[in-house]
Image 1 (tube, rainbow, N blue to C red):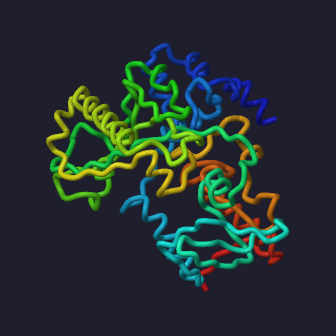
Image 2: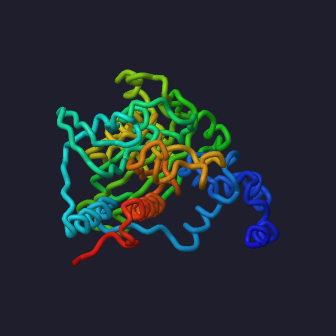
Image 3: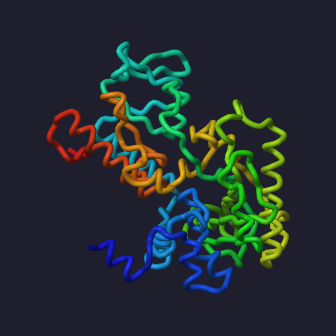
Amino acid sequence: PELVEMIMVGGNPLQSLDSRLRSFFKSPKLRAANSFQSLYVGLSPKSAPAIFSLLHGLEVETGVWYPAGGMKQIAEKLQCACQDVGVEFRYSSLVTTIDESEDGTRVRGVTLSTGESIEADIIVCNADWPFAEIHQLRKTPSRNFSYSSAVVSLLFALDRKLDGLAQHSIFISEDYDGSWRHLFESGMHLPRSGNFYVHAPARTDSSCCPPSCDSIMCLVPIGHLGEDLGAGPNEQVVADIVRRARDLVLAAFRKAGLGDVERFIVAEEHLSPVDWRDRFHLQCGSAFGIQHTLQQLSVLRPGPKDSRWTNLFRVGSSVRPGNGVPLVMTGAKHCARRILRTLGTGKTEFLSRG
């Protein structure tokens, strides 16, 4: 009944987001401003179901929440909660393989890059699932996934504040339709006039930079690395992509009236698709995991447990319910409850502060 009511009031939630917006807005700029968010689920406005207009609706209605001190505060608070109940953390311990039992029905532990083997009754894999399946379990992928775009992340420390920049800004290409072409294909395609997102956290968080200075992050979407590139593109190709993304951003800043921002940069870093793959184990360097197509959505998306092994569980952006911090944390909670059911504890809560 609820779905029927939704269709009657709001239209078909499975029609494309672009076609849905065209029924409301004649202006291409308004359609662009209300559809850029489809990038976060790995889809273009023309391929994203209209149901994903909820993303922008939630941003407008409830705002965007930011933890003071940066996103790392979420991880640090979770770490403290885990340590309170006796969880031990081992840093700089890269898992190279997840090891199967001889009969292949269970996983018996992991092997680290140092050669050390660690046995475990339960293993939770939080590497991007396609990456783990190929590189840590050494398996042929169980299905042909389609991937979201990669991104070039540009981090700038400035010696002055950009007063014309809000905390959250989206810079829209003049060739909006063209800016989406090839973003979800391999080859690190960077549109000549692309869209990008800018975060300036110092607008609400004074800990990000000294007074009268600025700290900004620019997220430039590009095509992903693909699965057939071996070690990936050479360093010069990657450096050229990063340079072009940087030039695109600085040119857009100038056009928006922010001035020659390059003169104000006192320090900078970047993350390329190769960094996203090698440092964060995101297959293809796809920053948002696998796409949220209808074939990879809800129950059709990998769940918290793989049926091939009795004691291997999984979390992350490519696992149900999907990507983004709230959904990944929701998926982790579902995974923990699934583990408790598997262990037969009868519990539904899994952290206690004694």
